[in-house]
Image (tube, rainbow, N blue to C red; front, side, top):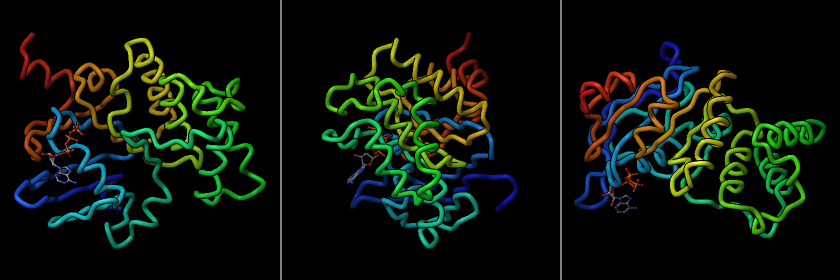
Length: 231
Ligand code: ATP
């Protein structure tokens, strides 16, 4: 791995016909840190996330995730990442625990370790008392917590979160922040996109501000706020 980087992007470009969604992006995420991609709708954050999970292939540039080159070694990279998608794609006909079990299988957690992995995720996301509840009976906040728990079931070294708290009320957002905080303290590397400045300030060690597919400023959130918004 180059240095101690979990993610390294160099000159990444992604075009959709005439639209350049990501336009020469450089990004570094050091292991053990939380980096925020901050920017308005359409800045290119989700496109960047999709390239990191190889759901989308870059037109130009270099992408490295946990030492693996993308898209060539995307399968190996994916096996060690947890992905929290922007859109809730939980199986609503299954219970909380069954959703976690499906992913425990997908991530090839051994039969004897599966239950412990599920218990750990349930506890982390504070959903142990909801294990037998069907997903369509959960609140929006619980569903979000389950999406995060599902991404953590194989104890990934790197978690990618695309707008993890978008559309949630402030109280639920606080709960999710506490959960993400805990992951940070446990040393999990996190890349999260957000368009909430207060979310980046609260959670990220460093922030990259994106606009029109480019990184336009980077640094510690407090410094960026001072620089760009004044006191
Ligand atoms: P949001 O917060 O709304 O998800 P974003 O910063 O994640 O915004 P992207 O979704 O990456 O931004 O979009 C960047 C640009 O690329 C936008 O102009 C968008 O319309 C365009 N775009 C994204 N995906 C596609 C696609 N599949 N086909 C065509 N254009 C796309």
